[in-house]
Image (spheres, rainbow, N blue to C red):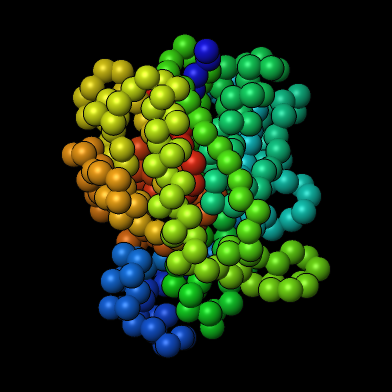
Length: 314
């Protein structure tokens, strides 16, 4: 079975930094309240000239530069976002134009909210195996500050803006991916009609309970498919020196991944590390999450839902 090998990553954060103290002057909250419940101390919001598309372009360009590949090598571009600035052209098409990717290759956006990047990996892998080509550009980007109600402390303290990009190569490596869906309004953002709740809303407790239930099942599914064990993996950190390097993605929305993993055991590889892209400093970006994930890019370690195992190329 063809797997995915991670070749290079890129990341981008917008220019406006919002501290917990700044939020405390906007809503009834405090740095202590936010930090104790979320671990977040700062988040980044787009300036007037920035958007999910500009962040995606910057992250993708960095990933392409780091990969050593030419634009013509990219066989497909998949962008996961729920906050694209335009209905069309898609963010992926804007990336295609900005980076000069070939016009005879597919470029498209997908919207799977928190699980967007994992869905993007699945779509990219499918395109590579069916249409041909070796390299895929997968991007997660969000500008959720444009969707938030700044007076809603249940959401404005959580969400931030950012983008992460990864270039994958189709390779004969271990690979497993588990995806799913639950139609629910515990996380909701209104569309162009502005009917219902236009700003983003979330029942954080309900989402966290779902993550605690779903995450271990996703993890064990991908482990079973690859016949690996937890001890074979590097989780949420940089490669440990094991050969080959296997990179898992399995995260939980609206909760801290470390908390969720601790519910089901936490081997030494599960130890969380703070770094410039951790939720402590960058908030939560949903599709821009793996993040969304220190193993992919330090600027976009984000909680997500689902699981994947692929190989990391040094």
